Structures are given as C-alpha cells and as structure tokens.
Image (cartoon, rainbow, N blue to C red):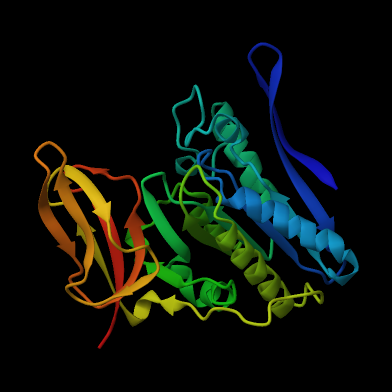
Length: 310
C-alpha cells in the first residue's frame, strides 16, 4: 500500500510529495522495519535496493510476518534533478534533521519524515558515495550505539562495519536523530554517486532478508551464505591523500587486499607526460575506498585502507 508521508505546496501549483510503500502488517506482536534512501539526490544505489526488495517481498507476501516500509526518495526534488542537496534551497537534507514543525518548509519536511519513522524496530538508511569515490558495501555506526546496532549490521551481508567515534558523527543526520529518539538506525554506504551497482544492491537485499529472518519477520527465501564483515574495532583506518595536484591513473579496484608498498595508482602530469608519484599503500589491509574521479588537488582523498591489528 502506497502512502503519502509528506505533501507540501511548491510554487506554480506544484507539490512536494514523499511516499512510502507499506508491505505486510505490523499486527499486535509484529515488527516494523523501514528502508530509507534518496536523502541525497545524486545517490542512486538505494533505488535498485527498493525495487528489488519490494519485488521479492511481493513474490512471497505470505512469508512476511511484520511490516516493511520502503521510502525510495526522501529528497524527491534532488532525485528528480540528480542534485545532492535540495534544489533552490541549496541545503544538504542530511544536515537539517530532526527538523522543526515551526521552521521553513524544508525543516518542516524533515520533521514530518522523522516523526513518521520514529518507533520502528529498525531503520536502514541507504547511501552511495559521491561521484568521486567508490565504496565497498559497508555499515557506518556511532560507537555510542554500537552495542545495539552491530549485531544487526553484521547480518546485512556487508564487507565492512566502520564504527566511528561519537565526536565525528554529525548530529543533524537522520541516523543520529532517530538513534537519539531510541529508533535503531543503521547507515549503509556502497558504490558510487549517480550510478547503480546491481551486484551491491543484490547483496544488500540478501542481507536485509537475512536480517529479517533473524528478527522473525521473514520466513521466505533467503541467502544460503552471508559475508562476515570486518569490524573496524579490530584495526585502524589509513587515509591516503594526494600530495599534489594532478591526474590519477588507477591500478587497483576497491575491495582489493593490498600489501604495504603495493601501487594503488599513479599521479601523472598530462602536460609533460611524466609520472609525478607512484601512490603506494602504507600498510597491509583492505582497500575499501578508492577514488574514481581522476582529477585531484593537493589533499584530495585517494583511498582508505583498513589495516588489521597485528
């Protein structure tokens, strides 16, 4: 059943509409799971996840023993225009939660979304990377909520769970706002902006069904194998930034296991045809982020590597 979450007036007799698709029924003892995406309009990986999850649920609706709510586009204007923020307002929507019922239109929209999601047994907030970086499928969790969220995140068929220090978490995100309101929320990030990586989408849908099975919500088809993710608490994350401006020629794809000294990419000068730097891994580990967009300036992020503790 498709329901309207937000309906607000726009100029020239148009409306901003945010929808959700509700499958199943919560019932007296049932659980409510919410899948959220499209907060950033240029992050499209979640669109495929919404489609594929709903397709599978609709094939075996009788196996669903709870309620799954799918919100494909929290920022519909951004998704329609492939714009990261909210067009005309020049705002990053994930910096204004939990919003305000007495604020301007965008703050009021954020408030309505949060109020609609509150009380769910679990919210999964799906993001892509931006257009510059490719990410392996991963969950990102604040350490203050790790004890509650990690047991669920590890069932989502992801490669990596990155547990952040609380000080690095932006309080105006939807995940922080909901977790602060005692609504468990896991952020999933994967792929790259403006594209759909079907392999990653299929993996996450498998993971969601695996988690729903564990929660007693799903008794239908689920994956026979689920990836056991790496936990960031077992090691350290190394950041590799460009030492100068130039063009990078990638050597290794993201998701590769690297050794210290392996060449990740070359930083080249396209004017004189020289290699300015062989960018090498400083550690052994998992290359879980790699730059896709080849133009860099001094300080630009090129890669992130997770190094296991020795």
